[in-house]
Amino acid sequence: MKDPAAAAAILIVDDDPGQRSLLETFLRSRGYRTESAGSGKEALQMLHEKKFAMMISDVRMPGMSGIETLRRVRHEHSTLPVLLVTAFADIRSAVAAMRDGAVNYLAKPIDLDELIASVEFATSRPAAAPTPVNPVGSLPPGIVARSPLMQAVYRDAAVIAPSASRVLITGESGVGKEVVAELIHAWSPRATGPFIKVNCAAIPENLLESELFGHEKGAFTGAVQQRIGRFEEANGGTIFLDEIGELPLALQAKLLRVVHDGSFGRVGSNRDLHTDARVLAATNRDLEAQIAAGNFREDLFYRLNVMEVHIPPLRERPEDIVPLATYFIGKFSQQKSRFSSAATACLVRYRWPGNVRELRNAMERAALLSRSDVVLPEHLPSRVVAGASNQPADSAEAIQLEQIEREAILKALRKNNYNRTETAKELAISRRALTYKLQRLRAEGIAIDPLEPLS
Image 1 (cartoon, helix red, strand yellow):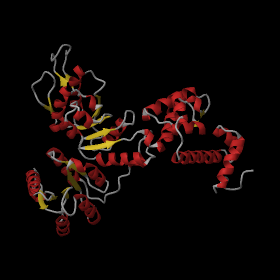
Image 2: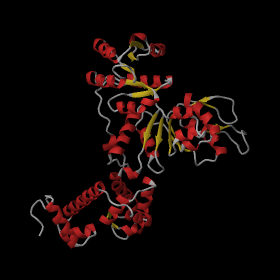
Image 3: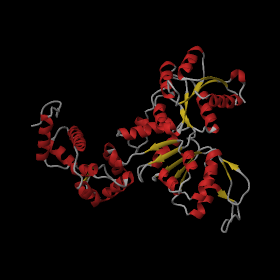
Image 4: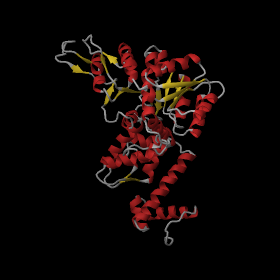
């Protein structure tokens, strides 16, 4: 227990006296000093008068809400850690508020283990002015976030990562849910611990319990030796449960227990074990519809969905298509490849029902079929070309294609010292076509050669 004389002082803000009393009693039992306020206005006044190591605030309060209080605190006390407490209906607002500087948020009913983990994390950090979370400039190779939608996803992931909260990652098949899970682990304090992946849809139901929790020797036919389960392996790190919507109902009750307090037992054993593993889960299913159909436990859903990250499909973030394709073609090709303007148009206009996974496979095929360093439409899967031709280009898409083409032309010109013939070869178009495109760029007021116009 902490030394009371040296314990951090925590300000608890809630209009419910019972909730304030509960939090104060618990935190004092853990050695913290506490004071409380019944409103955001009262909390701001107390912050002016006294120094606190942290503030814990409810979101829904009459008058000044917890989120508005957070914004005022962030403006007037920029280094004070703030933890939000919220009902499930307020989660989206709470996540947005975290971008304004909240260290974490907890959903009601409060998990006291999560509470103390968040408090210990926040009060042990050295005081420093908060900086906006912007991980996009330092993403690992192959992870693209040109689109505002994906930039928001990675900002949320960076905000969520330092906490101990469970995360549910949703999105269509192939959008990159595992990639986001890996980043949350890599950006978390558990980064040096194990990252254990379990695909709940890929393991037969009769083996899945043993896979997750392990078994003792002789627990069932074929159990010739003791086996350590994946939750045990993930101790001190992160376990990623992919395709959680495929988990059989019988196992959902057992998973609920380990998610709640880390307790589990190996198959064939009466002894309880404990794991300190952060749980990340992912699904391409609508779990709320699964709950309504009786196929997924509501209590497990709320335990897993403390924080949610939704990854949009590739068709909703067309800015990412060409950069992703460029990365993949470079990965699979023996030479430095580029896309013709017609191939680029196909890539952007196709709907990509298989998302990033389908794009990756298409680029692997294109790298094998392309005999030169230029990827043409005929090197793409026929469904991509056919699907692109059936999609009318809208104005936003046309503008995007023009920007891509303009950047490619100017880059090729500089590379070839503004030689038209070599530039046309580089772009896989005729010299006459290049001349026409350059005339159009000049008409738009774009400088072609910094020294003199091309002749």
